Image (tube, rainbow, N blue to C red; front, top):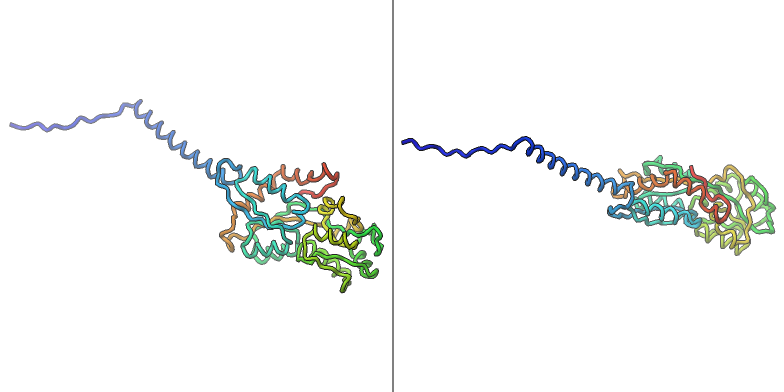
Length: 297
């Protein structure tokens, strides 16, 4: 007698059930895709939104700090981006040195000549103009060099030297110091000995020292406006086109320094380039001082 083989019956899913399972699988895949997109975009330029907070080292100028705009930049940036900014306020020369060595993720400086050399040497990936104001020469009311009202910084420098007046320099390889030295070079003269005092300090402290000594110095306009009420110094020379004070944001070359927070640097550039930030730069300080401290580029 032949034994019948017991073959299990095959179970087939009807069409409607298959479509329900297929829809369920597609829905799950779509949800995973949306969650992944949200995570990666949230870590970029779209706000904190639960993304991991990472540090961003910003090397910048003391004038940005002394004017108060640096603190505002940091606060506004941190509100909308997943980064914690570590601002290091030094002279532009020192900031560029940090960028060259990979010790800073992004730089905000105001020394065009040194910035060009930095970029030409391959240390930077990009340099973007952010804002500007101007430099001014300030001095005591008595004005022994008779430079008040001049619009020619080189002529003012000559008169300061010929009158035997004292000039206080930052002497710190900053953008302000570089501008000052370029004026002496153009004038072909420079104070000597006790007539030339180098502080090695930032803009705010240098202004205080010049004020205490009742002598001349070169300053950026924004820092002077912020400190003007506490100083007896007055604006002597302004309006010279060579006294333009240009601030630029530089992102170091990530190929030379792969460990820098390149993504954070790009986010900071994105923040400074936004129309809202440009409006803030234009209006910064106006309500209190009724003067423009900076102009956006």
